[in-house]
Amino acid sequence: MTATPVRDLELDLEAFEGPFDLLLALVLREELDLAEIDVAGVVLTFVELLAERDELDLDACGEFLVLVAALLELKARALLAGEDPELEDLDPAAAAEELARRLAEYRRIKEAAAWLAERLATERDRYFRLGPAPLAPQPERRLADQDPEQLATVLRALAAEPPAVSLAHLELRFPPVEQFLGRFRALLSRRTQFDFDTEVVWMTRVEQAVAFLALLELRKGGEIDLSQAEPFAPIRVRRNAVTKPERSHAWTVRSA
Amino acid sequence: MDRPLRLVAANPLDRLARTLEALLVVASQPLSPVDLALAAGEHPDRVEMALGLLRERFQEGRSGIVLEKVAGGWAFRASREAAEACGRLYERPVERGLSGAALETLAVIAYLGPCSRPEIARLRGVAADSVVAGLVERGLIAEAGRDESVGAVRYRVTPLFERIFGLDSLSELPRLDDLGGDAEEIRGRLETVAEKRPA
Image 1 (cartoon, one colour):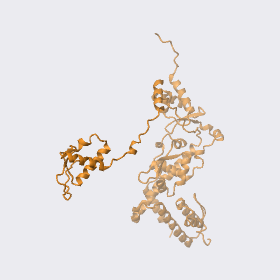
Image 2: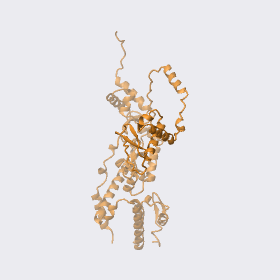
Image 3: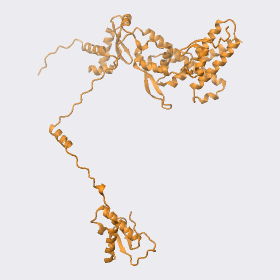
Image 4: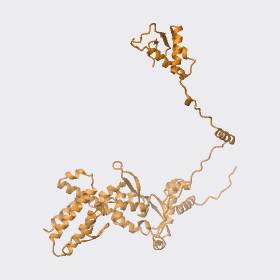
């Protein structure tokens, strides 16, 4: 036997061809994916080598066993990453059972592959035309009878200049609150009370909003009292007989 | 008003058979009886009967063209006796150089499909990526959705697979149980080997 029969073992595998030594080097340098390597093929080659020799080189066998075991463990970890945690807890008997089950499964697949190969050989003399599926004719989609005048009308509508976009909201102007303060004060100098709603009914929406702010301002200053019979009922404005700024401001407006 | 007399073909089924013959000769893939019935504008039952006529007419030893039921449909092929001549003109590139690994992978997918590459790798103990890519390229397998839990692409065999292997459907594959021994038997053999191992 040569000095290093294991490392010089010549391999001829699907994914690798060369000495075992080189295979190990490539795997360790991660230049060869261990998952692609048929470890059983490596073992088979070694066993065949052993069979050729008369004497058993125990050193070589030991070295080979250690290397192949390491290789198998590496490969198992790579293939089963995060998978099958239950396998770790298997006792030897269950592990043997699992191994036998998987081997049986694989053997059936191997036999199925052999059947396919045989089938391929017997069907090899069947020649036939192969091609992509032809395009099916598209069913004609007929339109209902159309009125050309109607089409013209629709097109005319499309051709018309679109209406100018209103930019009015960009120029929204808020009148000063003081303007309404003055107006309400003048009103209250003539009358003791009035309905807010009737006073602002003719105003724009924005003016009404500012008028309401003025009303709140007067209420805050204690110049007026506000009351409302129920939500959305007219707001009654009453002149405060004596202006008392220190008076607590109890809200009576219940409107939302 | 009386309709004018028309010459009725002696056997109307024969005329349908001729139509089917024409459809099959322009087809590049097997046509199902439903395809044929739709194209011929005939009832599927009558199409089946006409196919029976054609099958008799186009059989090995009688014609250079043979009608066969394959991949779920009907298709013409060359007769086997003309295979050698056909081989000089054309080759069958799809199955040329199919490796053992490719056949094993095909077997896994044909029997257990749709299945994903991790599942195939698990069964064969070798990564299946390049083999699967090769089979997809040959058109023998195709993607069939994704694994719901892992998200891996699953594969199934194509009608071309059935056609290449001369199968009408996957149900014609022999049952796996008929092929191999069971786990018990393998375990027994493992133990025998262990006992025989020299000290």
